[in-house]
Image (cartoon, rainbow, N blue to C red):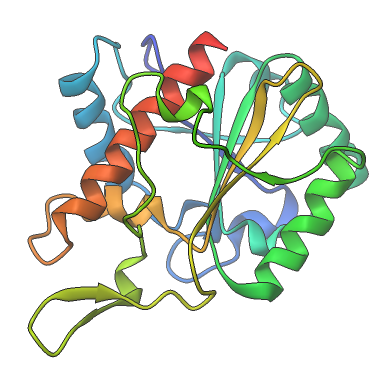
Length: 227
């Protein structure tokens, strides 16, 4: 039984063999549990939400998916979704759910994700999230001038400053909207917010990057619970 709380972060877990693929932990949970450990503490400090200590890992076809307003999916460049899974994900989103995808980079990852999400929403466009979108202002007014890279993409510049070298190029905040303008899917492309949460207490991970990642997380969750 899951611990009772007002909010559980829910990680979307691929079905079948995909759930076990990765290094010493599955790709879908690449930053777990450290990201959740830090993010849950931050949410308690920055909001009045009663937040569970850990996330729920849930498969698309599990009926409990409808209990969670916010799904977080990492490494979506590796997705392989069945027709049943894409149908269920569409149902979840159209019934009021909100999906954030993160930690995928470059043209190959994008092509795979695009193919999968097109099966979910074949007639919906993927667009850059505009500056006036409520997601960017629901609590924090967010700018997108700071890259949020994975730790493996950081390097030390000639003047000692920590810089990012993202393998897919510039970061993009993209989205898919329904016909009424509600954001259904927030797409962190060429970014790794999960790493920024995971390394929040590590002094070598730049503070501006992790600060922005926390603010995005707060806005994501408030948006998911109010829209």
